[in-house]
Length: 76
Image 1: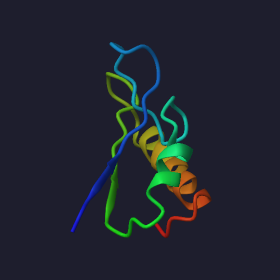
Image 2: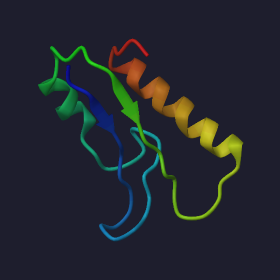
Image 3: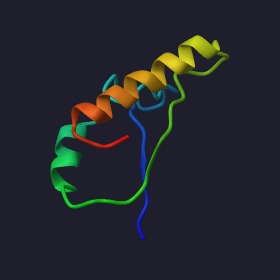
Image 4: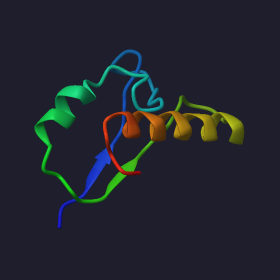
């Protein structure tokens, strides 16, 4: 069984910013096109930026990621 870990990237290469899926620069449309037959589990990692964030900010980022995945037809 395979496993996929998803993470987006915003900002410069050396900048710590891993926002909600779809809010960064990763071309998920291209990635998802290439894995049309993938049926394994996926995890989402969000590290908005360095520092502390409220639970509301974190929940909002996960909700955006959830909606993003659903928009590509993934059953989340």
